[in-house]
Image (cartoon, rainbow, N blue to C red; front, side):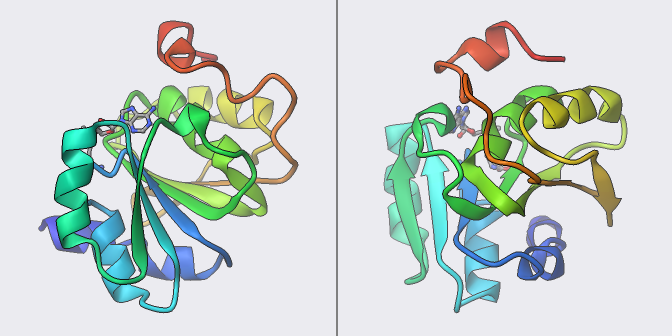
Length: 164
Ligand SMILES: C[S@@+](CC[C@H](N)C(=O)[O-])C[C@H]1O[C@@H](n2cnc3c(N)ncnc32)[C@H](O)[C@@H]1O
């Protein structure tokens, strides 16, 4: 079920302090269920499409804030956790999420069982992240160092010229 799928991350996310950003929140998954399950945490629902942001505004719980924008345009190293479900190809999703996270935090990605984790590992290493860890079907990339110079790349570049 959709809700259970989003809530799989609750315990993992609890392990990292600071604001949580749901990158490409779309219809609100996993951000809205996580916000409801973690009412003491600040949630940012980041979404590139204005129309989807209008929908998110209507359903966001009080501890969640909607931001209309692209991952590549946000301040780097600002969040404790970035979560993303169905955001894009795994190396692209990793490149969009990791720069948002400060050292000590993590990106938590909902990736399918066939995801190429070797490619994700290469991207993570280039962005100051650790090798991928799998927890309950989720992939965790811990952020070890600040985002290196040159990242995030300009909007669209990660998709056009993936790092891996
Ligand atoms: C396939 S949807 C998944 C939505 C939701 N996470 C889910 O699992 O149902 C991907 C969403 O990511 C948004 N998106 C794509 N690239 C983005 C980017 N670079 N920054 C922010 N949002 C992005 C799209 O507009 C779309 O709403």
